[in-house]
Length: 235
Image 1: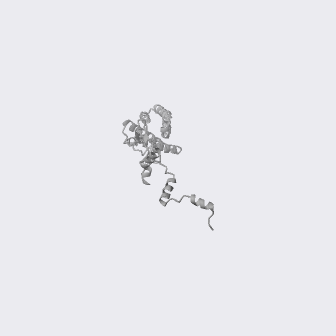
Image 2: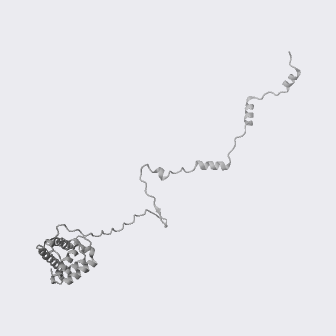
């Protein structure tokens, strides 16, 4: 059956297809051209490509477990200095506590021959003789024997301190040793009064020492008071 007249007309009017090479050119022409980056974008990309790599910090470079130096303290002048430890104040010397005499220290057995001051040494001998005379008198009076023994111990403590006073002061015993200078002077005046037999003067020195230095002299002043009072009463 022959084609219709209308189909024959369309076939006559339709152009022939282009050759393959021309079709390829037409395809590339129809594709949109690639976008070209602007100048600013090119400059930014160039800076990113040429940027300096970041340097790791000290904490990143320091190996684990390494010693970390202390952070310096900045002064007003701009320099950094590590603060030095302040010097320690000198330790004050501890107050000297007089050593207690031994329990067997007695006036009759104390050795005062090494006392450097002759007046003080003579006073100690006078007090020893006073105590020995009272002990001899108490031998015939049983009621006075206990008091005489107590006087022996109390005066023995004084003579022991005086005998060891110079050695203690030389060994760093606190300047005054075991007997202060004021008390040593009072003992010298007391012994001089006893040697003269001036019992009123001896009593006056005993009262003065009790008023000024009771804490240091309380142990043996009781015995001195007994002995001087007994001589004042003529016993």
